[in-house]
Length: 115
Image (tube, rainbow, N blue to C red):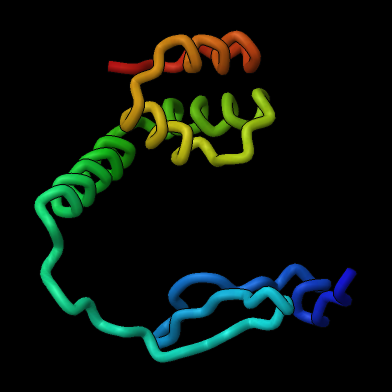
């Protein structure tokens, strides 16, 4: 087993875009930083569609009352999901898997409002 670096032991494991840099963790558990590269071609139609769908979900989330948002958050915690209420809401709007949502509501004891 490789000894983790001090940053990893303290829970700092940088990944993704941080300011002007892209960061990932190499196999030797050391962070690798490099200047973020700009896109070389425009977004595809599918990428634009997905981004619009995510924006619509975010807009719909903001339109929910604080009580409804709290219920989604509480349901995700009570069902021991590894996601926050907003991520659960996003998942639901992306997949519309009624059986899985029914299981989450049964496990959490919370009735979630969906459209």
